[in-house]
Length: 462
Image 1 (cartoon, rainbow, N blue to C red):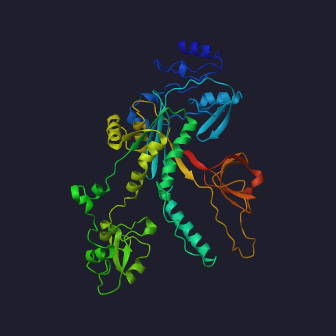
Image 2 (tube, rainbow, N blue to C red):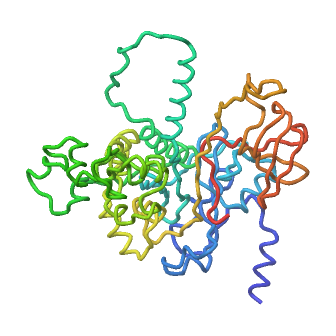
Image 3 (cartoon, rainbow, N blue to C red):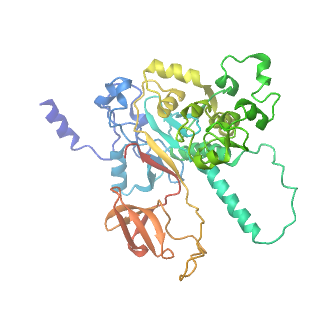
């Protein structure tokens, strides 16, 4: 009886009225809603919000809709239902599809809540999470590119080959010194990626507080936990040259076949093409026959797993994060915390180890309702490879950027597709849908919906 009476009253409720959460919590009241002056931050509290924190990740969690005002400044997020009304009434337009963002077409107030952003910096993945006092409003993991070094090497080979065709050029020695604060290209890319991600989030949400987790890595103690005092100054090669050290270590014989009294070559246990390094622990001695036979294999693949075990884990991630951690904090103007504090708080809340959960704890999260995490990848678009040796065909040299590029989202024949490639001088494109079906069509038959550049937001397991 009461339910039918309530449903009858709700039929006359105006659509412009504020949405009031079904909760007696004083913090979830009208001042957090979106009417002509406000933005909805939360929707009705469902049963999943009453579950323990450990079970929340198993739920199909909510997805906020991000809102910007007429001037392009971020406001508090709203619900999909409310955004649908605004779009249908012509009060908003779609600004971005993923993460779904709308832009209001009418003036609003500037009532905002404090939003805290936590960032878990990393070598391969970056975790991020932003929350208010009641809700998590965005979270996810950014997967960094790992092929920057290889592409730099490829560019260097192209450049040297091109210079070799120009004839003699006098040597230059005035450009050998790097400026102060210089970072290696791969390290600079990771630093820029952290900054770019935070700036992207600041265009979606009015973030008022930022905190970054930094870690103090001791590379020596990671290899020798018992090291102390003056032993830090006594490295592996103390009193040796690299080749003499290897000759002494491997008893002047091939590490694979055991031959002696033959010319020996310095060989990598894990090849550099397989992310191996020049650390002494990754170097062995091999005769020419074994070195050529081994090729691009690791020592374990070559049939010598005991040699593979002697190669210590590379410290690329340690060196990279030691170089950029304080620069990130300074560049963002953020507070900092340490990993052991994050671990203690995460275990206290009963959360599993993940980049998203770490970022949630860094942001000061406790019992807030979680949101569905994004999976973010970096899309590289400016591939300027050209092909000039096409026998019987006109050289394929691009004088200008094609109208569509790979990873762009387009609409074709009423369905959504992602551009997989462009051919015939940009007149035809190859499309791929979510099921992997490939379609070729003329560029005139499609409608561009979203450029696929920069950071691409998707949902995990989708």
